[in-house]
Image (cartoon, rainbow over all chains, first blue to last red; front, side):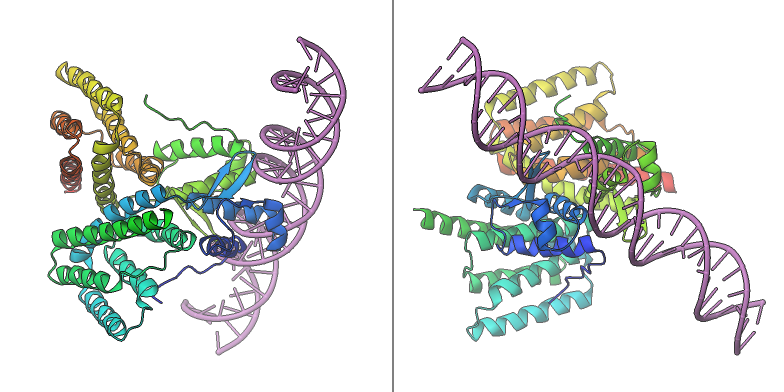
Length: 222
Length: 222
DNA sequence: AACCGATGCTTTGTCGACAATACCCCGTCC
DNA sequence: GGACGGGGTATTGTCGACAAAGCATCGGTT
């Protein structure tokens, strides 16, 4: 793995991470109500820490809360996924642009070797690539931007939502080989320190993914 | 005003809004420690609501908290402002692109009349434009995108940070007339439903602002 | 004299109980 | 018969107190 780096120190931290994975992974289904008392018994902690965890989940847009009523897991829609990918296109495009100028030489060589390793796996027929490899690649680009706000919005927020969408809507999808080629082109632009090109390629890459997903959604709904 | 629309219902809401304005407005200075006990007495509420308010401020990136140590207001830097404007460029550019296709006809005409009103004020010499007019314009574009994530990240998060930077670093700045022209061009692109052009113009508009601010920072620091 | 450890104090994290609000059910009235 | 109003219940919001962790001071040792 690249970097969880999220070390829970307090009890609220642990419950927050636990709840987040449970929600993203679908253990707690979409639209499910988060009863504070029930969760406090299930996780064997006070209601206060549950409340804090829920508030953080609200900040991540993973759950919604109405005052004096309660919190429930957000229900996802195809339109929401499209909106999410629009934001990804904008943010990760900028991340790629910045990464082209801000990544260190060692980071770039690491990125290249990472891609090379994925290439080997893809050519050997492993479809392992899709999940872990893809997120790893995008993580490195985002972190390479060295832009704090960009990093936090994407890694702490959007990526978890994307994962949740994947699980909810049952996207284990292919699109491996072409995506690999796109990744390769992006890295090449970064190697040449061409931020403008890197941004364009990254935006197209995410746009393609969006179209791919939309197409899949339409075919399943028809 | 366009839309605060943030109606505090619970006590923690009110405290959160109060604290946020106090921090953004500089009443609570940068780097200041937020003592929970002290704030609970100052605002005459329990420590629990103070904690919740602080947690929300942490989510907005207005304060930082270290476990078992405490929370303090973020200290701003020129580099941070540059990073913030990079994110603005990406997000608001996308917002303009989406607004070009998603804004209703009435929203567009309202936007035009708003700009016309500002034009009158500018030509009559009022420098009132800068603050209220500019934020109003950008708000409408962002809301016109109809993209939930875009709206929340910008309006609930980044714009408050930008305001805080303005206050902290003493930016009351001019750049009125040229900015108005840029706004006008963006609106024209939206009228023509040309999302691509609207994005380009918005990105340049924000880039100009960033350069303007950077230049001002360098001149003051030298 | 400087470094290390213990002790006490301050602040945060957590807990259980109380207050307030919303929902549900039922009775009554039109 | 339907709609409005009142009471009961369950859940959330708020509070004060206890537990734990960090920080400073002070004493001891090398």
